[in-house]
Image (cartoon, rainbow, N blue to C red):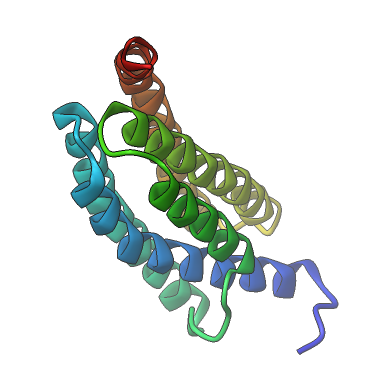
Length: 164
């Protein structure tokens, strides 16, 4: 399909996000299992529930648009998650691994914040108010997840530093 309008670009980017969110829902349980920090585990578990909600929101958006969210693979997220998996294998268990998990998770969050900010802006310009609100809700949750990871990282990074 040729992307020759903002409407089509909007749909393609939403499909990309749908793929990204589904990839994340498959990866987060592995990250939860690999954590040592109870606080980090809790943050990941909370975000897994939110991510499942993000998938449902995107499905709701596609219902509004009258289309299917399927048919695209988010190569960007695939790459970020592969890097994270590699880092997980390379780091020793404990606080150092938790620091690496936070690093990978924040890369994911920043990618998502950029993508959701963009599609929210498209929805606004396309006068899709209901969709814009749904996307804004997800964007806020992504920002909050990033803030939580930053908070958790302060203790985790300090412990990893002391263990070195």
